[in-house]
Image: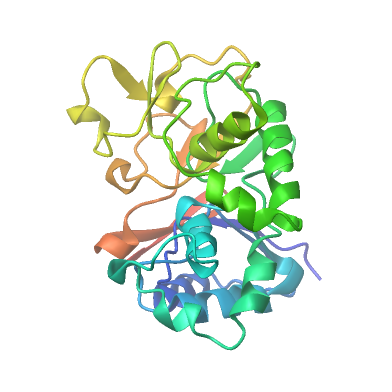
Length: 271
């Protein structure tokens, strides 16, 4: 048997039909291939419930990082936030196996190494962090998400502060900043402050802020790659082979993107 391919898929957001179609288009075989996701598995699409059930059924052939919508689903399920109609999560929240799916989802980190050179993270790599830094911070948050205090943590993770990283942050601040940098970041100021106001294409941004991947990172080596999602307005346009954006706005009527990391091929599906 051949070794198989490694795939990374952009934001699925509960678009179950599109997920199945693009995997069929790629001839994805869970018996020998591996599928990774950049997060935001749920919300806004037509069937988040079937999406999670299917991905869970892939067993060890599937892995993911968590996105902001995945964390929001966990918070909503535990009564920290009220469901938003636009998120289209009611069938999932009311499913008889929702707590099995919750337990399964909680196992995933905020950031993971696909290999020595490649990081997968939902929003991006904060410019003051190395790949090793972000994985260590992700592990800290992941340990809480897997543990008995995870609902209390979900209640403290919301908020825009602190906007800048430093090593003297309190435990709660450090964890909140880690969640925000890994799942919500788009623009960053030159001195490292996260900007949550602008969600548009970089062409329309002011000079004071830049996409995180355009801010100099002294800890990132030229051989390193970052694969991310989250930023539909970017449409995957980073102008760099080092930063691979896979959120191409399928849930908004654009395209779904699947990277065959074994061959380098990008497979797309129009909505």
